[in-house]
Length: 190
Image (cartoon, rainbow, N blue to C red; front, side, top):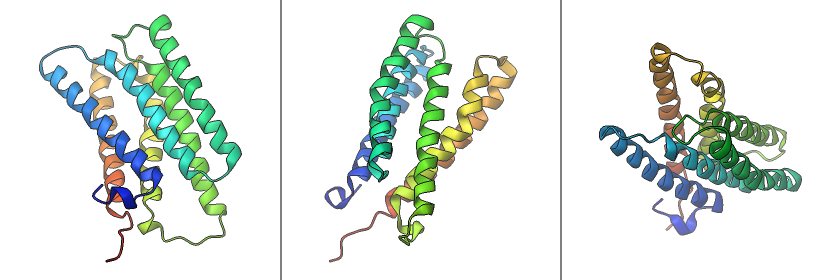
């Protein structure tokens, strides 16, 4: 974000989330390359990811009641996800329930934002609307992965390879939409 001070609060939050995601991705890549287990960090990343993205969605949603619901969901999700990770599953295992809950909640909030955008009387050029592109990436990734995360623990090793390909493609497409959101950020006039 070259124009940080001209960016909306929503874009600033999303930019911070992107930075945190890159740090976790680098950590995951390095540990995988070294042959070290790294699923334990996914439990922490999932909580951080949900917190950032839910907060982003609470900023762009206009209806106060929905904003409040999203904001209240953050500490509830954090407590429930950490409880599940600590007491139900082990940190070395995939946190399927936490990921599925995250997908369902974020997809629901993101779809609500699209619905409110369609119901709005205001006409906005979506191609120059960063929040549209960022929310599109969230919707694509989390709606696309909800069933993938549900089925992960039931898959044998042959299917996990296919799962990885589908998950990676959804992640790449979401990141492309995020990139578009950042480059279409309205710039100040000179």
